[in-house]
Image (cartoon, rainbow, N blue to C red; front, side):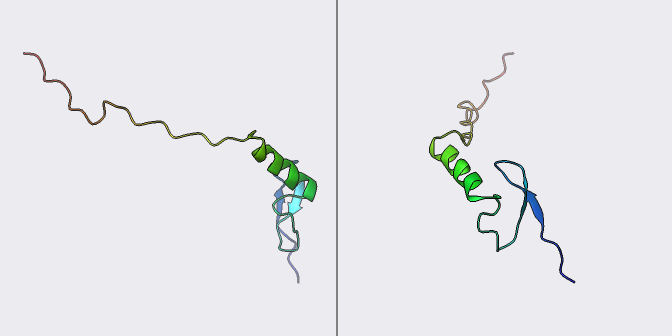
Length: 67
């Protein structure tokens, strides 16, 4: 008995796409969806958030307590 291929949603159009080596566009469903995604990256439509810079006062000891 052959198991049916695992279906994953295409990242571009959300259509179910077989995640198997025979699908040359995986995880996308087609060359069109793959190229749309590549174009979005190339045009900088997608961005990865930068890490927040560490707080400058983190390494400085707190001021002495007033008596």
